[in-house]
Length: 298
Ligand code: CP
Image 1 (tube, rainbow, N blue to C red):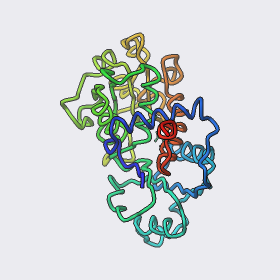
Image 2 (image 1 turned 30 degrees about the vertical axis):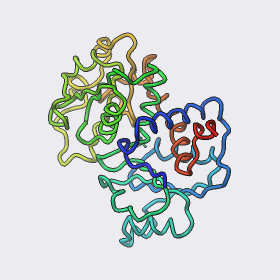
Image 3 (image 1 turned 90 degrees about the vertical axis):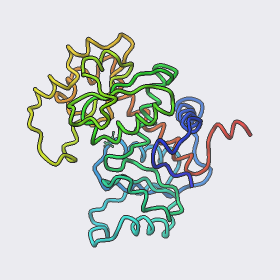
Image 4 (image 1 turned 180 degrees about the vertical axis):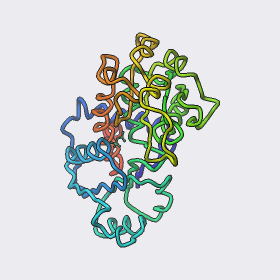
């Protein structure tokens, strides 16, 4: 099965193949559909807007039959495990599953599942399709990853997005630095002061504070956080002329980023969301064994 658990499971060639197919969905293959109708389910055990509904949009566009599972009202409430829930979907005829779960690497307990599983986010671990849409956005802008500098700023330690882009840039020859409150930096060797990080980067990627993953409430007001660690209009003036603003969203406007910058001319935040549908079409298609690249080679 062509499951996708983490970005580091992909080779450089596979990443480029997915990005190639995602791009094809925006131009030459806009209306392409799977040759057979596939039954897919989206199992979100954590809240989501973008990932859930861009997967659903991608699946509908590909001609899939789409079901959306909610743990609330399901037998999860009676104590059924993740493995038994997923095994049930496999047994009743589903062809692929998209799963978001709060446990890091939840997919390790699903090794005996024989249908493709696409990871839509595991705890503080991985978010491979977010990473692919981030990569597509960066590639559209700079036409390369070699030497591209990405500054990831904010709640790094709780961020599957930060982990995934770090791994991806290692594979693709780019660079990553981390900034934000020092106690939230997972790898101190990558730390830069916020002003230095903003001036250094080709892409400034701001992150939301993941209050839901913090043991204690934060001892700092929104205004103070924005001033010390956020992208204010004044701090954005340090960015290079060609540099872009990114954010996986949801955005807490006025906390990690000034609200006016969210839709500024150098922001790619909503373009990232549009790209999310394209990369999710590409990974769904890959899950069922199709790639445009292979078709073109035939
Ligand atoms: N970026 C992201 O994963 O957003 P959602 O939580 O809304 O899916």
